[in-house]
Image 1: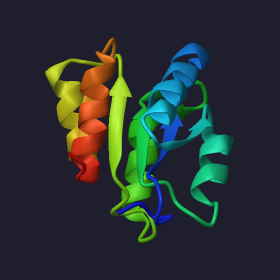
Image 2 (image 1 turned 60 degrees about the horizontal axis):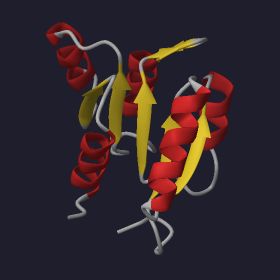
Image 3 (image 1 turned 90 degrees about the vertical axis):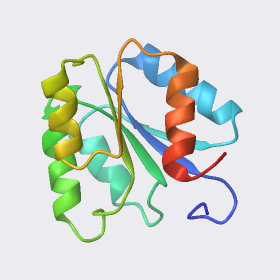
Length: 129
């Protein structure tokens, strides 16, 4: 169930403003609360809010951070160890996917992606049908 008891919340970590806005619009229209972050400081601020998101969509290539390193840090912290994370990235080689999953990602979606595939992945990880 959603952490707030009403609707699932997503934290979209994406430095491309157009893609970030598109995801906010799509998931907001699908009934999700959507928060966004584009750099390390905004990620820290979002994950330290009183109510954690239900799921993080995490880009690997950020201007001041490596998404895989962020994921490893999240998994090493008891508060965030079980927080679902789906990587979304342009890095689509088999080695990249393996690295993301080995770091603890719950899913891996390569850019460019079909929005329907991303929505399906989010719903699957959250246990929604």
